[in-house]
Length: 330
Image 1 (cartoon, rainbow, N blue to C red):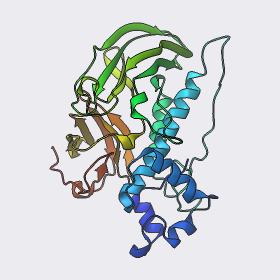
Image 2 (cartoon, helix red, strand yellow):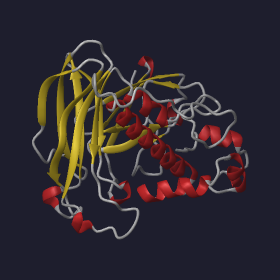
Image 3 (cartoon, rainbow, N blue to C red):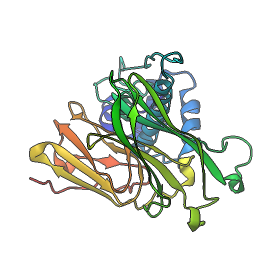
């Protein structure tokens, strides 16, 4: 799955401001994948509200790639299973990095700037990870009929590469996308994650869904799982109703604080957000990027070699166009 690099890389490889747009001759020349535009636009248009300015389109391609890697790597790792039922023993990513500045399958660009997909893979390969799969109706062919959306089926599992059984706490929440409130009881459990394998926790669980956003009794919601070990949050995963283009993701009320003296950024949100991305530049190092966030959780990111506060850009699905300026915490 292809994705654009971050904006700094694109503007270095295409120096004419007139050509710095999706579909320009110079941009197409830089992409060597066969049928790249047709295939990439199909994935973007089928899943997201298309925005064609360079910053927004870059973000959409990056989230498309990251979501693909998240789904694939979590599913493959789940298939490691347990002794006597191994189905997948490992995978290789294509591709790691680029041999010249371009838009490509790489998860690290020519200047070694990481795309969000890099972090999606890293999260899926943590020693302890939690995964969610969620069913959705076919919308890419035929007639999209909202009256058929009456329930969804979901699975939750834990993947572990530890050599010992780990006692963990698992919480599964159902959070309204529009209000940020839990619309069903939290499912909490304490269990042992089996060593070097997959622990299936919930399989083929069914839950009612809203036919439309107007049905306030069953607002469109995310299913969010969090995994805690020894009181520390070690992994999360969020399953959204798809496609994302059918969702109203405006006004997410995202809060961001920068602590320059400690090299830390703290992000929180009053509503579920999809695909939060800090725009990376050459030499910048982040502990995480390209993630989802739900109310009640705060994500703290370690950052090195950051640009000045006034030039730090971030975005997410539904974000306003304006770049914000922040007052750093000392």
